[in-house]
Length: 396
Image (tube, rainbow, N blue to C red; front, side, top):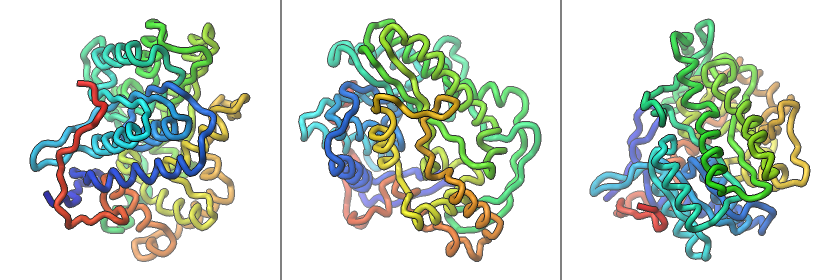
């Protein structure tokens, strides 16, 4: 079929298998160009099919020859309908990994559920024995609690007061004000239940109880802080409360891993165009301005560059550098004072008429469509493409 992008707000309802494969190959090429480095050898990535999770799986496999198991919840293809992006990403990753003799298997299902946890533990026990690292990179907006069966939904809201600021419709380039109503009722509690640290802890507890964690085991989860500019809707909003809980959970997990000299880390990553960030009002405009500045300064990174730097310059050093809250700060270049001062200045100036000049809206759009395998250089989108692609190592 001829596959074209179909957008609905901040999501694309189609994905291109060839474009997704080329994206994955480019990330693999970047890691291979850096040579083999210190890193994990047997890795479980929870939320492994897109964004930072996919970059972590690629960096583990092609940076240190790690055996990897990926867990994700993706829509498979059917005749005349494309799969979701992560399905095609994973198919491409596993195809390339298997070509080089690397172990790579995947489980598709609800990572919050006891069923998927049990299935994953059995696969680890059968194939790998023990693992030395877990990457937790889930970004789901909803969660069905495995014990109660109650379904919780997260929200993106400020706390206390309404929040009004600029945003951009990245499809049209229109800069306009947006007002977001404050959280009410159980919004905060529900968001923490979905996006906080409880599920991360449940995974680590289950793995430890099954004796599947090796000595000196590491686990890392990803967070974001961002600038003062986005604080009301992000870090001091409902999602920020969930991130606070996630970060607190790292200390609890570390305490539980003492017997095996294990450690849980939070990596605070850079603002990037992801399926999650595209949904947050104000963030697209901030990223458009940030990209312009960081590219000009020569310090812009995508997911794969971020995770390579995390592994190489932070996570696998003998002494892991952290901030006062014990967090790894791989957002350090984004949060440089000179960068943030420039963003703040441009923010005041930004209008529909000048954003294409003072910001990198085109770069934002390209990255957005790249997420779904579109606008990728070298791909002929007029070519008939087989939407039915299988994941070689998918465990049924």
